[in-house]
Length: 200
Image: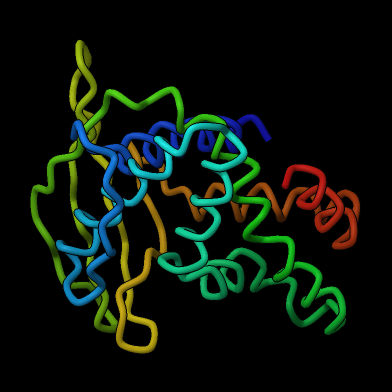
């Protein structure tokens, strides 16, 4: 769990910064899902707009909508528990999928407010196996060294979606999967669902 808490902290930094480009007008722009680089750039604009919504509750609601529209939630969720899928019931699988988006929002949304002064610079885009892409960026926060962050994106129904994020060398999906495995091994799959609902 210590490893995962560290990864979560890194993701909080990476997600918060990446979603908050240094612009002065909180105008929400449509996310351009036609190209990996444009997708990451416009996703940051929407994230910034969400953080300027006036209250934490409103910001969380907007971020939840952003997540559901632009993150490959089902693909991420399936990867996190793939070793357990043969052993769980359809009802448990459905409960897990239902809890996943709120779990992510509940874990990270509060931390986004801490990085409103950060910006993101896109460095390059590299094609990956299966037709996906890695968009390499730098998270730039005043007074600090740039932090490397790589968005792994994939196409779902013709639109680009976020599949994973690596921040400062930490693979968030792998760290989260290890966290989930630990809970299931010690307490069972229902305990994982309960934990996710509590955090969400």
